[in-house]
Length: 437
Image (cartoon, one colour):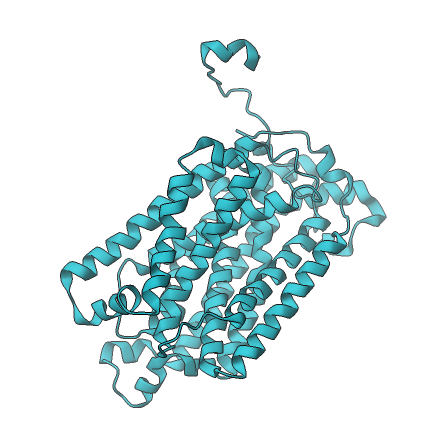
């Protein structure tokens, strides 16, 4: 159920400005990211290119994966996380930026980072891979596939935000931002729009889910797996798009805990909300562990040359073996152990620490999957540039998401599923029955 229904504070100061401290920190992070990318590129061109690609893939997962939590709440009629729904939807604002960065990267020479390009030119790729791995086909898969997904994202968000923005436009009058009109064309009245919004969200949400699974499967094969063109794993695409949704949920938890006060929704984000979110993150932690082991197990007992080499490089040879152990610890063993505790999920500081650990772990997982396919030196390519680049991406995302949420209600104030359901039955232990009343 929803754990709060009084949205007066959430709409009282909309639109409002962002804290200057936030703008300064985000701007500093973006500058640091640009500096880090330039520093790496000036010394190791291919290393900088694969770093950029890896960060694009990671933050694309965070952005789209965050939106998928909102879509899941819509399709399952989940009440527990409605106070997080606007934040989850706002995460999608980063997708167009990443899309433009990826397309530009490919157009200005990014294809040279993929080993299959040279093999295709030398006609040494197997025939079935030579058909799929061609530069034009590869480029248009990314351009059209991700473009379609973003268009579906926009249609879903437009349906979801329309009642809230329409209500705010009526409330603000002439003071409403001009871009509100993009959401309120042919406005039919609040009650009608609320009912229409629910239907439209479910319609577009189904299409977003289907497109997400298919397109992110293609993205995982093209941008990640094809860096090692002679390796393949059937479970890899599902493992990739599910862990992307996992990274989005973790990032939503972190952002909401840090930004809820200035967004005026901290009173809606009670400990029980994070307890529920923590349980979902815990479930995805177990799923990640299961699918990771399942992929490894099949490759191990099959002992197939084209597959075992990829695993051996990352688990048995230095400098990658140590990083792989850190990934298992940060993505599974430590969070699985800590999230068993109910209190760990309800105390903000501890939940923030666990969420940050998982997000770093997923970034390292993308790093150890993608970078060794390109970097062939004995040293670990994890220096100042690799530390600063994700900060730049993250600073840009926080800045964009914060700007959007400062212009609209940061909670779904007109969503009927955000209010308690009178038909729900709540069961309490006998000893707490009177206290619950």
